[in-house]
Image (cartoon, rainbow, N blue to C red; front, side, top):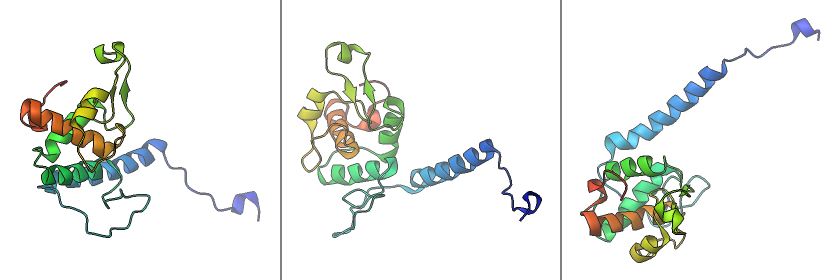
Length: 163
């Protein structure tokens, strides 16, 4: 086949591809915000795949928040999806491996870590039974931080700045 006769893939503008992907992701992320009214536990015997947590929730920010809310409901820890999401976006932009190496806690040798930027002593004191003991585990980090916020502020929903 001659070079002129070869099938050529049309060149797609990189920005257009990026916007399409970003637009798709934003639509998926927005759905739980519009319809989330509470947490529901995964069905017993849920199968874990690369895209889900051991409890069967999506292995992403939405799933981590929903799984935390289910645990919080069992333990009577107050908080809402929106309150948790708002604080996560302010503290870590949704990065479960976030670590603050420059603030006063870091200067004392105890940097803030994870989605809700919890320091080790706070995580250990407010750890919620049934979650991982790894401060970087998204569900454990969210649940411990919400437990702390509930004791100190009444709910994570009442936290509107660094805490």
